[in-house]
Image (cartoon, rainbow, N blue to C red; front, side, top):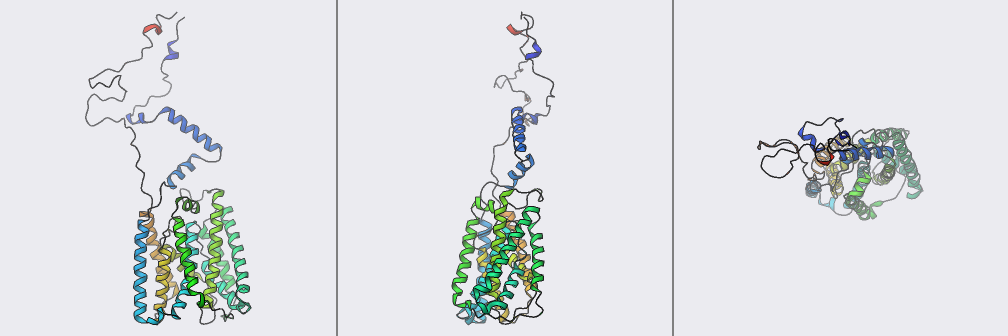
Length: 415
């Protein structure tokens, strides 16, 4: 019986690649890749999702050199402003003037913490300022009933609003800044229901706990920044960071970071507004509060938190808040007539520049991989050919052809 040589010959149905570079693609690897893609598509993930996640979820830890270097600049700036303030009025850095500075710094710091947390989670909370103003008005109206009774309703409403807002963002998958801006406009309506300034009714004086208040803020800022440098926590918190198609849903894993970030930032804003009301020397004037949103978000970015989310430093929030608090007191003592909106605009613009620096120099270093074999002809070597040679001899050899026609398997000898 004669064997059909077509059964054993190489199948020529598929076109043979002529480009030497095509030899780097392996048929088995391609088949395995197709099989893996089909499996991923079957469980709800597309190949595009896998490639996008491979590109965005970079291996390794973010480089902290740019953050540490910029934090040194912030520390020097805070020290310089403090020196100018001391030269102007040394009593401002001694008690009781120091207590007022610390309370103001704690209030601004809480707003900045909320802004930084929401930025890292990819849902910048633009309603921080209006919420803080609403809390100030609430304390001014109900402060005579005690601090707890005045703050609890504000905390409950802020928490409920943050949860509803987070659900809207997650269900509709809309940008966080757009949803929080809509919430800010709603809170502004509530703030401006008052037609006249509201005199502060409460008598609570936080200056007696000034060191504890500012120390608590500083501890939260440093601990939160250090925790954010841990790669799994940073990636988990920043899963909503825009990548690829920003309208593509990120899955159920982003629910807890989004809800937690909006909830905590709103509660921080209530506490900050209450502290600002206790330090107010006059009645609380109904306004928009957006200037405090700009200051909080601008300070968070100026401290090293990326506007794109996920990345941030360690000590930047503490140093940036200290510098701005000292500057505000210095400007007041020098009778500089500077609008808070102007300060917010300058701080925000500086934060955008820092974001660009962080995103450019803070990403992980690329991992050096092994170079693919390239079948392209070398610059020298006239005897090169893409076929694998029969031997590794440097002498010129002719590759063996197919030998199915010779020997005991030939068509002429088979029976």
